[in-house]
Length: 125
Length: 185
Image (cartoon, rainbow over all chains, first blue to last red; front, side):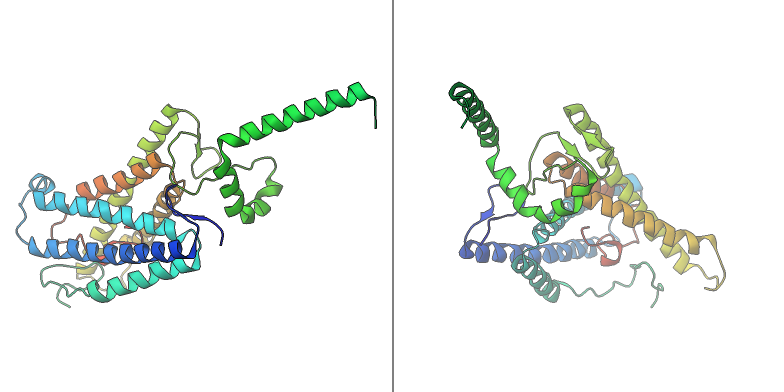
């Protein structure tokens, strides 16, 4: 099997065993990404209606700062998984897709809060 | 097989050339092999474009020699890298600004009591804004694909700071909602 590199020059795969190991790591990272999105949603639910009235107050509130930090990790992880997918290895692609599916299964459902609006939906629908 | 002293000269020149070549290659063996391996498909494509044939390192690296998105956007100095990172940072913030303003406008359109078939400027503006948002999103993704530490950091930091500024402009709008996100965000 030819050598594959995953985004970092220390992460090379030379044997089948290493590929299996790498695929498991990517699978859990994909699950982790869905879990992270869910965690952000739960944090937002918890703080719903409890944020300051002023924009500046909200801007520097610790709940929002935590959200921003989680968002930062979320997009980093999203980009890394995209780059791993770009190695075009079928096993890697499968691992990431299956991981995303498992993650969505456990963390994906989002009942809508009554006073939250989602773009494109009627406010009371 | 030729005059002895000429062939000696020729073979020593040849040996020197080979040594030089090997020494040059010695400094970066893996890149050359890796890039050749992973881009043999691409090289077949771009050969007719002339002499331009840069090797793409498909793992994270530092440095300031990059081509970013377009032929004309080349950097080869630390200053170029810094300015590019600044521009990309602003692009990231602009992307979040665009995303949240589009979501805000979309919500306003949905909440308004005017009948749906009445033409308002918003109905044409919103798909246009979405297209611009998509283009920006793809550009940011392609910049992340340069695998340059600094440029990718600028992308991610721009997104983070943009989210910080614009996600709580409207507190009734869900910031963690899937509908406001796209594949990498």
